[in-house]
Length: 93
Image (cartoon, rainbow, N blue to C red):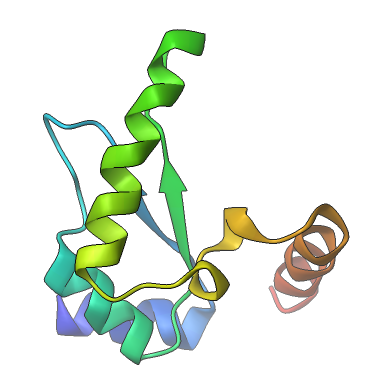
């Protein structure tokens, strides 16, 4: 996980916290490691329909266990900032 986080930091790649309670990929410990290395995170509902958006609470809980804050999560940014961040990421590739 350390190597993956280092690569994500170097390449400015966001890592996903999957909110499906059956998965909860990117465990809290890994989320905290990513945050500590300046890696941006994305909380994904893993929804396949609108009812699945309720799963976000599990992803948010996972992030909180990793001491991740809103500023560390790409999809908590206001729309103009999100657009700027995505453009900056595209320009570096």
